Image 1 (cartoon, rainbow, N blue to C red):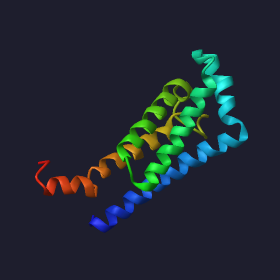
Image 2 (tube, one colour):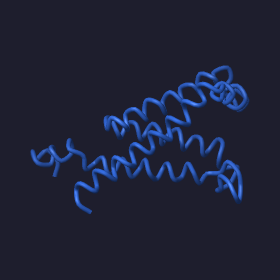
Image 3 (cartoon, helix red, strand yellow):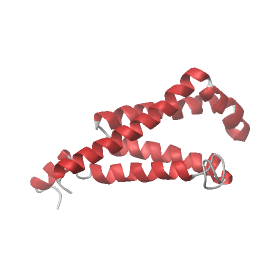
Image 4 (cartoon, helix red, strand yellow):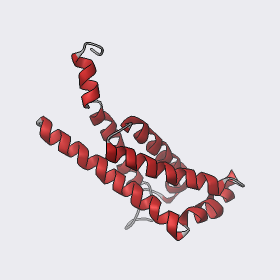
Length: 142
């Protein structure tokens, strides 16, 4: 793959994940979904009285990470933060529902698994960024 195509593919992945994170988060900010998740789930599984605050932190982290992905800044931090949230979501919510999101099941792991794989790929592609290449050219990384 040539460098131009790799950069385009990298941008497509970053922006796609950013759109998914934004759409999932912003909708919950306006339809009461974040408060419901905090009150009806997080508070009930042991995070009371902080469930709503934790739910808002999760969604705001998605918004911040989406903006960072779009700007192509602090990619590893954005990916690690999002991966952590997704893994916790798998463990706490989705794993008991099985693999499938629709069809063979409901609310399963498969969608988060795809997001985890794409975020991991973005982190590896970021290793080939301009900043990393500059360090190699200057002999700071072998």
